[in-house]
Amino acid sequence: MRSRELIGKEVIDAGARIIGRVKDVEIDLVKWTVTGIVVTTGFMRARTLLAGDIDKVGDKVVLKVTYDKIHKA
Image (cartoon, rainbow, N blue to C red; front, side, top):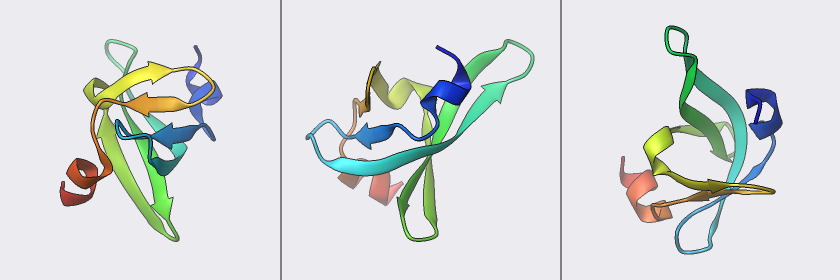
C-alpha cells in the first residue's frame, strides 16, 4: 500500500472506538519504511502513533492499543 492511500483513513483503537483520521505518514528515508502515522484526534489536535501500534490496515486503520494509552502518551 502506498503512503498516500493511508491519508484520510479512519483510525479505530483496540476497543473499537473511533480515534480520528490519518493526517500524515512518517517514513524512514534510509530504509523506506513507515515508522508511524499522524492522526487527527479533534479540532487542531494530532497524535503521532508508532508503526508498532498498528494492527491492521484495510478500509480502516485498526490499532493494537486503546484510546486511553494514546491519550496519556
